Length: 144
Image 1 (cartoon, helix red, strand yellow):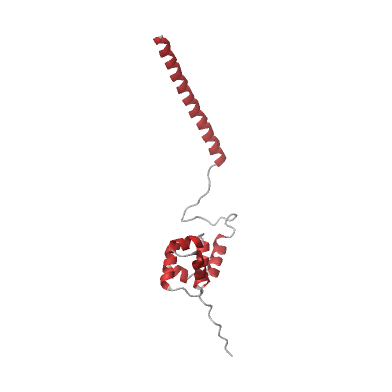
Image 2: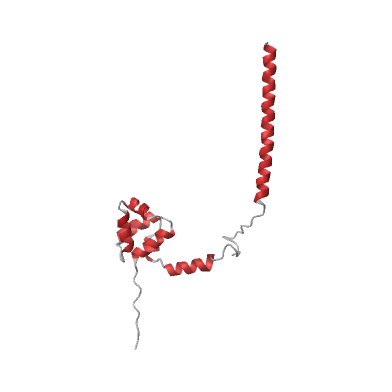
């Protein structure tokens, strides 16, 4: 006996909600840009089907294409993130766009250099101000 599984329904509202969350956009922001209430956006995200015109408007607000929402697969996205980014803090995944971003200087040393440079500039400024004061005092004494 052949067993056919029912294809998983494309719950467009859930896809919209997950994409919105991944982009860090709140429902009230989407609602404001669409000119609807936050409750309306919530209902859209709970709906299994969303008409194409509304999907297009929401996609514009999110800054993505309607196809990106339609083709969104949460499981595939999670797998992609895990395979490509998990442990990125401890693992060197090689060059990004052909470039390595290895720090070749000590930020603390650079900070200390900047402080020393600021001290030198301050001393020069102070010296200049002292010279101006001395010149003004000399002019005042000459006028007396």
